[in-house]
Image (cartoon, rainbow, N blue to C red):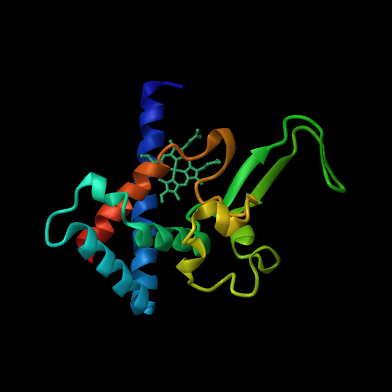
Length: 169
Ligand code: HEM
């Protein structure tokens, strides 16, 4: 891959994603003013009336919970395409080599069997103890993909989103 195509990939993958995450976050916070108030309180506690700084961003726990919940309800990449490279048996199903499969982020993120009856509700509290606890160690939350092709910009995106949220609130 040339430097030019790598640069394009990073530009395209990083441009709309974080801004769409912020739009969904604003929409959901306007519907749930209690969470908006929690998030604002936390920003004021961490930064007071000063400008945001990088170290403080790590202390924005409520903001992280909110972003995780937004990404669960509205994963920006709804499907992940994969090609099976060798014959693979998963439970009762056999996937021959060469077959293309689509992993549906949105279906897994909204699955009542995995998440319970409140799967589609905006309840950031579910992420209070982190992603592993919230998913009970299952691969049931992958807004940034999974495995070797996982999003390389995920930490950067969360940082950008927190900065924007801190400035807006
Ligand atoms: C909320 C923001 C973002 C979301 C939800 C997101 C989501 C994703 C997803 C689902 C993939 C595919 C992973 C897979 O196939 O398993 C991906 C790949 C990628 N993302 Fe992101 N992304 C975000 C922000 C960013 C940012 C800010 C950058 C760069 C600065 C970035 C750069 C990339 C690149 C280069 C890839 C391709 C990685 C590869 O194929 O090896 N992303 N992203």
